[in-house]
Length: 251
Image (cartoon, rainbow, N blue to C red; front, top):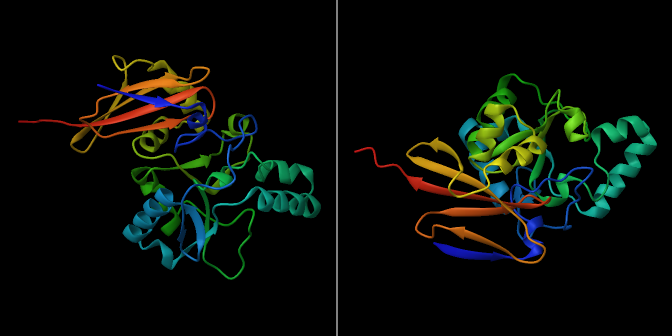
């Protein structure tokens, strides 16, 4: 086993960070950005997986990225403009408070049908056709529908069938199968708080083990099996999620 030492700052980084009205984005720009579609920028891994998914379904012929990474200044401008044009109720339903937007992480993308008139705040993205195909395959590439109908009380945002968030595989699979919002998943995974008591899911020929490690006041130690691939993400709240992959010998 190998010990990984994580700083307090690491709590606010990774694909599983929770950003909402209670938990703000801890940075204004991802370390790496890449362009997709018409030039919208996303965090590099998010962009790569979105491109793979779009290539599989031929999505760029009919779908356009409406919004990706936004700076704090841009989010503020969108908030102010929407407030002036549509009023406080509409704005609070569909626009995150500046500093608390997933778009500031580069892990979120708004998608819309490629048509002559596109609503920047609420683009059209139905459950049928190519958009439906995207939604069916999204979890296999690590994306979740971040603001589903019925989840408004948990997410603090109205239903947005166009807003997708990268959380990575297998987490997107688990959330989609369990119909969980990221808020619910963040709490749910905390029960698996020991390497001896992980959440286990099988994907292809691999077993994936997921466990939660609570953050300590300064540095947090996470033990990993260095012989197997792993990822560690902060949850932006109170701890870290360790994900490890192992091959299954079926002989």
